[in-house]
Image (cartoon, rainbow, N blue to C red; front, top):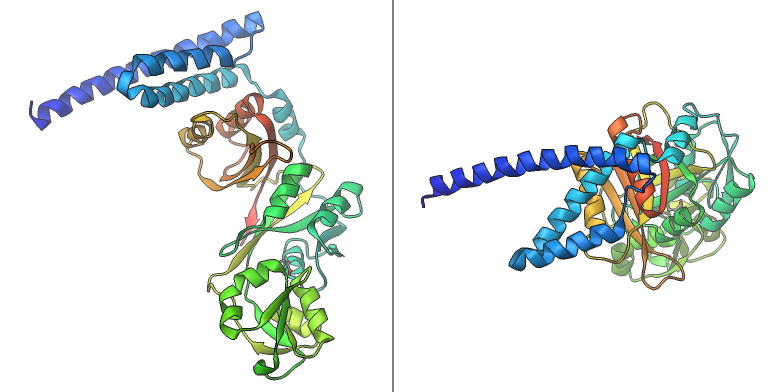
Length: 371
Ligand SMILES: O=C(O)C(=O)Cc1ccccc1
């Protein structure tokens, strides 16, 4: 057969597949109604696993491919069923009840001291709030939990040093709502009470900043020591000879230090994303980013099939992070960010379907991110 003829044949097969696919989806919707009447759950895992094993066996050399094709087909059917039945009542109610306009927070918790990058993020997001400083990330979550602060601002990700794992673990532990976010350009300087670079023996900073300047520090051959924040490092360097801090110019000025070198981070476009967390769900009308987390069973294709549902809904994932579930044998929670709004009924339907099907599911928020 010629290429033309083979293509014609494939086109005909594809038309047939599409027709059958649409027929299958229509049938699945009818199943939803029957399940509703009989009070049966939409997801019947035992039946699905059996179908997948059968299909895999029957498909011979294409067993693996057929399994994934059918896993996706069944996931799409379930989604149509969830949407037909308006599943996910709890999440729908929570979204409906969420405030649309923020109360101005009175106090907001962040890391470090006056002049830390977290403080800068906080001031940009909430210029009128009173900042409350804490020496570590767990204390910020505790402050939001016990009401000492209305919100907490935390760094989550850096464009060169990657995710701040400790913060993701705390997000997954507390499951507070993410109410806003900001991405800041981060330019470190080397600041000291000394006036000459060659006098510096030890450089203090927050581990994130030390990582972002690892190449520079290696080149200079100085030793480094971790501090609880870049501003804390500046304060420390102000009291000790032959030391310097990696911090912002603002922090250097705050603690009366001389700037010995500027822009010392290894990557030019160094940026850090910060989020603000709170106890209550807040969904501003212009919110365009959604965060959630869930776990999937340890089986071939389970994560893939969940991700395929985002792709099928045309949603663009901007971040995926996996973190081990404490005390479990290498089982993971997945954390996902994507562009979207729960005001879009199709997006809300997808989240509601997932909230019914996935273990350890939490909708973490729908917010906007400042640049
Ligand atoms: O130490 C700080 O100033 C922080 O807020 C943490 C941090 C460190 C480096 C880059 C971004 C945030």
